[in-house]
Every structure is written in C-alpha cells, then in structure tokens.
Amino acid sequence: MGNQLFTELTLRSITLKNRIVLSPMMTYCAKNGYPNEWHFAHYSKYAAGGVGLIFVESTKVDPRGCTTPNDLGLWKDEFIEPLSKLATMIKTYGATAGIQIGNSGRKARHSRPWEGREPLGPEQKGVDHGEEWELIGPSAIPPSSKYSVPRAMTKDDIRDQIDKWCQAARRADQAGFDVLDLHGAHGYLMHQFLSASSNQRTDEYGGSLENRMRFPLELVAAVRKIWPAHKPLFYRISAVDEFDWTIESSIRFCKELKRIGVDVVDCSSGGIAGDTVGREVSRLEFGYQAGYARDIRKGADIPTMAVGLIIHADQAEQILRDGSADLIAIGREFLHNPNWVLDAAEKLGEKNPYSMLPPNYGYWLEKRAANGFRGNTSTCATSIKSV
Image (cartoon, rainbow, N blue to C red; front, side, top):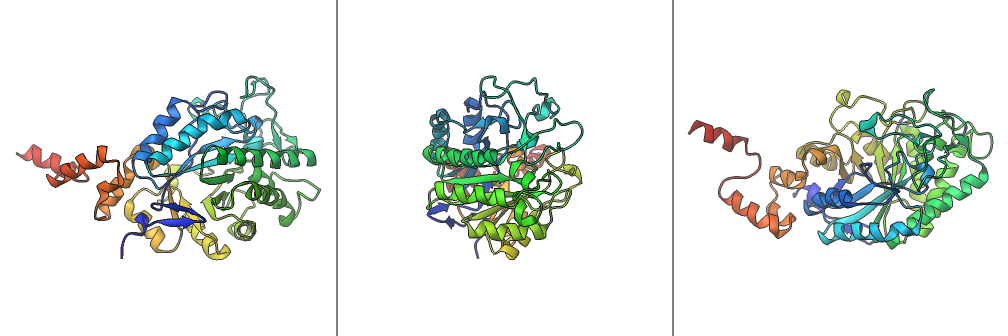
C-alpha cells in the first residue's frame, strides 16, 4: 500500500497531484491591496517544491474587512490581472492554484503582527487609497475593551456583503484560480454571525443557532452559484471557539454546507476573542486540530482538511490513514522548511521523490542522492568530523 500523502485527489473536475496543501497564511505585504514581487517569491517556492494545492492568503472582498493596511484585495476588477499572473505561475509548476477570500468584520483595522497586532483607531485611513475605514459586524460589540465598537450591520449591509463575496469569487475565477476557500473562522465576519457572543441580533439573523447560521449559509449558497460548478469550494471553520461554539454546532453547520455545495471543510479553531488563536502555540500538541477534522468528516459526512502543527511526514500520513482528513494543510512548518514535500517523500520511502520537483532541481538532487547524500545531512556531518 502506497503513501496516501502522495496519492491524487479529485474534487469535482479538479485533480490534485497529492494531498499536501499550503495553508492560506497572511503575509501582510500588499500595497493598496495589490500583490507584488514578495508574493511571487513567496508562492513560487512552494509551487516548485511539489505542493499539490497552494492557497493564496486571505484576500479581502471589501477594503473595510482588511485585517491590516497590507492585506491582499479582490474588491475591484483591477486586481484580476496581477492575481492572474500569480495563479499562472503556481500552475506552471503543476500545482493547483487556490485562493482564500474573507472579511475580518469587527476584527479589521490592526497593525501587522510584528508591529504589535494592535487595533488601529478610526483616524487610520483605509486600504484603498485613504478612504474612511469603518468597522462593521453583526452587532455593536467589540471583541474586547481595547477594540473599537463596530457598527451593527443592517439587512442592506448583509445583502451588500453577500454581493461583495460573490463578485470576489467571480474575480478569482477570472484570475484563473481553480479552488476557492471561504474564510469563516478565527473570529472573522462569518464566524461573528455564528457565535452568540458576538451576534446579539433580534432579527432573523440572530438568536437561535438556525438564525445565526442564516447569513453564512446565504452567503455560501450565493457564492456557489457564482463559482463554476466544475471547481471545488472549501470553507474554513473554527470547529470550536473560546465561548459558545462547539463541535456539535460545527457538525450541524457543516451538514448544511455540504447540502449547498461545499466540497471540503478546512478545520481550524478559536479566534472569536481578541486574538486569532485563543491558546499559546507553545502549549499545543502536534496535530491538535486533527480531531476536529475527524469529527466533522464523520459527523457531517464531508471531506475535511486538517491543519495545525502538522510537522512530520509520518504524522501527516497517519492522519490520512486514520480517516481523520482527506487533505493535509501545512502552514508555518513550510516557512521553516520550504522543501517539506521532498523531505516527506524521502522519509516515507517514495520511489522517485525527485520527480516531484522541476528537473532543474530534481536531476541534481537525484545525482547527489546516488552518491550517498540523501535526506538529513547530520549523519554526513558527523562522518566528516570523525575522519
């Protein structure tokens, strides 16, 4: 039996060459929403490195929904051409090009993480060339006392947001992306509607779980009609959060997502409070969210993607073999080791690991391996010192 990590997966008409995914990770390097040389340098490493599906980071459907002044954007047609160049580059190396779209809602308007990730005041000018930067959310409730109070969305705002997500999906398709991931996790806008801690509306979009699910489900259903039927649609969920959202709530919600055409649930957690992740990473265990992917996969009968401190090849392979998930998303481990795919292929004993790389790399690495230099070089270093 071969390694499941390196088997193909077909979703609708799109076939991924393996089960390894670059998780959408924000890099906060855009200007006025536009990609630049940084994005090409960043994503080309993983495309050339053999990743099956590459997600471009959370790209905003509305300038008001940007987490920082340096988020990527898809709120106007001018973004299509530069993003199409990025999608074309990704696909040139045999990877599938995906993009995540989102709106941070009441958690918008922050400084970048390495600048303190602090909420910025209303004097901060907007991303799209200096407009007023208004915060919106389901209710006029901030995540914590240090945040500004958002304006509660009207029903017209809700309809407008659904249209903005649909137009962003259209642009993503025109730019050549083949997989779309809707960001409904980490305390951002759709998650804010789901959680009773942030959604205290008294209309049909608040109150009961059914009502709190209404906006995200209406949005997803509308996007599914715009997003081409032959292309898969993902949804990123916080399977549990710090307050009232439970795995049972997620399973119920994901059954509805499946019914309206979502193909894969991207399983994360937390973020409805002020911070994106409610627990310190140093306190987390390897693969700490894989259990959520397993529970949703089984409970909602829908394919899932596991993410979160998946570090080692055998760990990733076991998650697939256990039936916990159908895809493995790697995030910060890829920042540490952009050659994780090759490293995993060698450690799992894949027959021809170098064929996963462009011949410019694969040819020379195969010759290097033939001379006894393969995988971890620590053994070689020890031998040299002992000579």
